[in-house]
Image (tube, rainbow, N blue to C red; front, top):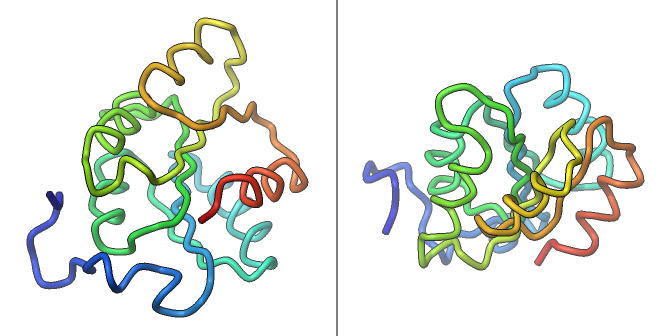
Length: 141
């Protein structure tokens, strides 16, 4: 099941690793500053970075880019990180794609809620370059 039905949608065989040998990472955050920072940190490591500023945009880009790893901010307008992650994990095509939640909230309840919707890891903002790279190493296909 794809969220996008137009001809720009990538097929599974055109996945990121197959297209160019790089790990494709989707980074979803409503803060342009955080998206740019993450893009700079990860692109320097040879990753292909795709960004989205909200959950709806992310769902479209997942179909198109077939990311190997997804970082999702929790606090976003319209479709928050919990909802976005639940939609991704409930889709058979993408349920095995690791999703790492990002937030400034580090409470036990928040982490538990992230696990319930299917997140693979929970990073607290502000995150360091090393934390981001370690998460990629541990969870990228």
